[in-house]
Amino acid sequence: MDSLKIHLLTGGYEKHQIFHELDLTLPKGKFIALTGPNGSGKSTLLKFLYKQLKPESGAVYIDGQDIQHLKQKELATKLGFVAQNGKLDYAFTVHEAVSMGRYAYDGEDNGHAIEAAMESCDILHLQHKTVTELSGGEVQRVLLARALSQDGRLLLLDEPVNHLDVRHQRAMMGLLTELVKKGYTVICVLHDMLLVQVYSQLALVLKEGKIVSYGPTEEVFTDDLLNEVYHIKAHQVYDGELDRKIWLPTW
Ligand SMILES: Nc1ncnc2c1ncn2[C@@H]1O[C@H](COP(=O)(O)OP(=O)(O)OP(=O)(O)O)[C@@H](O)[C@H]1O
Image 1 (cartoon, rainbow, N blue to C red):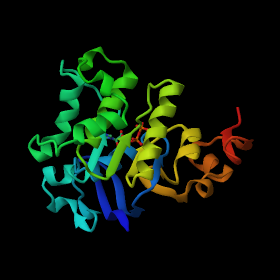
Image 2: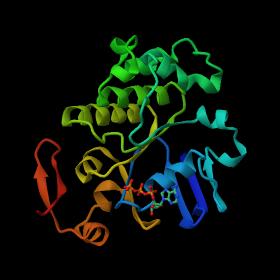
Image 3: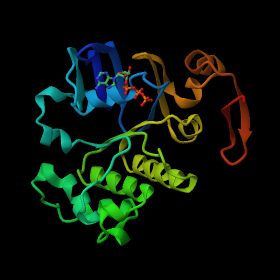
Image 4: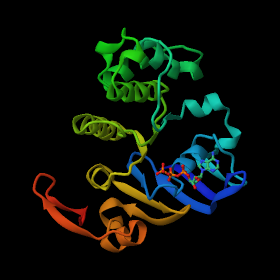
């Protein structure tokens, strides 16, 4: 079944239309990378998906429902969003920060949602710490846990591994992969073409608000595409651990 349908979506900002009749269907239960150059519309597309922006025309459907007809709280039970460079500025504890994901349920925990989310993100041991005392990688995990505690099955993440070191990048991407195995749909803005190729099953490449390519990641990435989108030369190398070839920029 489809998770998300974007139907002839036109819109953007007051003086800057980004999308014109964008039409796209994203399936359930996949790790979908959203990539493309700076300013191509990736974050803007996410804003339409979580209803921060309203289309001039066209619509976004989740499980067949037009999200404009859903109250914000209803939408929050279906999808969680982790913002780019998300911050936790106030001196809440980690437990309190994750609990905020339950606002759609008027704070009710459903028995275990908060703890389960903290366990998935490996932050149970941090739960009594103040969020302002956390490292960047820990904050990212708290933000993901807050989104998970909303109990939706669709996760939207805008560059979740920005500022993370390689080990934390791997941990975050590994966690997202595990969530996909459990039935979540992950739509994740990523710049790093290596991470896109290693972790995503489907890749959507945007340029100037248009879809340049969309499909299984190994089919989307080609030297022609990388040249067209980023104006770079690329070559393939075989990775013995992955047992497949991946594209690297030619320096
Ligand atoms: N609030 C805004 N008002 C007007 N224009 C905006 C606003 N936010 C973004 N834009 C413009 O919309 C276009 C798409 O921006 P968007 O942030 O979606 O790109 P992106 O692909 O996420 O970029 P990046 O990779 O740099 O994060 C850009 O030209 C940007 O300048």
